[in-house]
Length: 419
Image 1 (tube, rainbow, N blue to C red):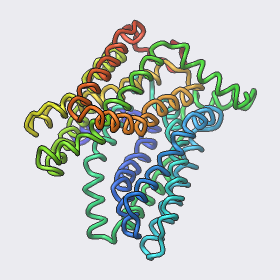
Image 2: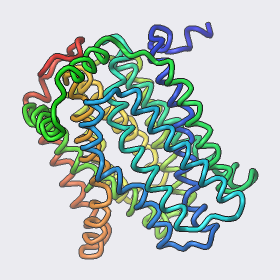
Image 3: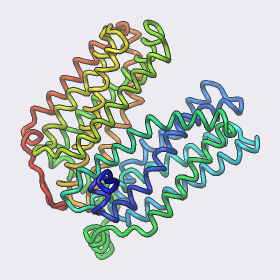
Image 4: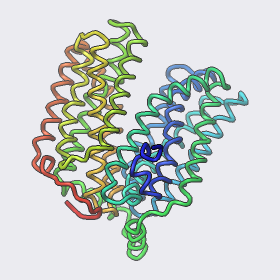
């Protein structure tokens, strides 16, 4: 019975077990750090500006390095990039923990270490996206992505709780960052014996035999993107979603909860129900394999883009939370099906470069969106701004749905084939 509770992809794919195992604790540690880092800055005498500076220092290298890191991930052995990234983050988090626990940390130390962490993270993300499909048989790619999404969803719930325990009862922010450092050590130990499939090995051999210049590799990566209307369409839809819809969650939602509901307790309920929706969506895609993944993902993008309208709906907090649960299913579903489609249709030797544009069009748009939406709310007021955000977000999602290659792209079991 206990064996049946283990997802099939973990039972059947020993290399994926290593990759998955390396990430379970690491993702949890990162969620702990996201809570602990602001308190670490405040604990050494920093203020709001210092917290913002530290956050920017961690985020900015990702934006700057995402596309170049994708090129290098397609040129070099991806496993080595993952290990190197984990080692750098192990060192940065260990140093930060030691400085905090010994009372010698200053804001400038945390800013520099956050920047180094962000740079290593920028290299890790596209390399991971390129490596994952080489650890599973083609039929297990969607469950592998869904299970990875499930770890993020569970960590989003457990991470803040664990961070609170570590900060409040186990030595403060330094202990939380120390926990994160330990997760990277575990990740390295599990990645070392990892042996990707012959697809990854053959791509590395081809690269060594005929190395292309960095500029040529960069052009080839962009060519892989622009030659596929479904990729361009999704990147455009994600850009609008992250710039015009997510600020309803990151910026406006907490403000409305503070002004019109029960403050942090109401917002905690909404975000918890959204997290439960994420978990439901991940489990659903462990069991269901839609014949047209991108079509379903695009429809889920439409559902995800309703979040601004939900936040501004004037419903009771439970009503908002239950609707956010549904959007939680949609959000995790659209990302899982998108990443699965990339793995099925993008050649292995280009997958990291294409994924880097995905990270740039999503993560890179968040700070811009926060600025634009903040200005929009100041100009029009919060509720009219939410209406504009909803119209733009849903409109862009419907454009993605209307693209023929999005609606009709079939499932392709073989990686390395072009679409």
